[in-house]
Image (cartoon, rainbow, N blue to C red; front, side, top):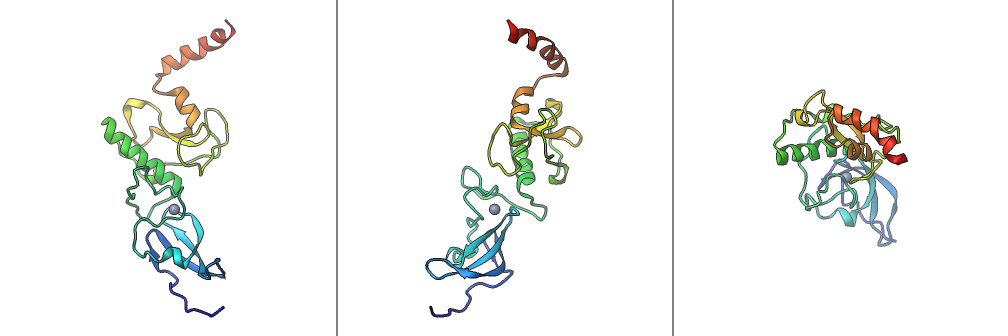
Length: 183
Ligand SMILES: [Zn+2]
């Protein structure tokens, strides 16, 4: 195998990927493989032939990268980008625009606990998309919106169960549900 010169440099940016270091291996077509960091926070390995489309904003760590929107458009990222927290932030911002509800939170206001505080199930922190055990951002009092002090990360299932119920409705629900199930 002829030793070709490296075609990418450490620290260079390709789309959303920053070259971290060269790994001492090559892929099947002989391209050097580098450790790269995606703007979403994920680390992954990429071969130089995959990085050639320099400055193409559509280069991500993977097809499941949280920065990829379903419509294929690229998310605007910033210095505080953290994968899942940023994703929840972004989605809640979109939702607040669509539903015209108050919004004043920052990415840093979003904390993903290990367990859902309502159902005690382990949250699948890196799951992309809705799932019963994936984190979702709840508005504690729905009509107050995504504002500081009114948001909490709970599981998808707990969020569906709670939905937009008021405290009184939840009390009545809790009172009646067991009897209902025994009927
Ligand atoms: Zn990524």
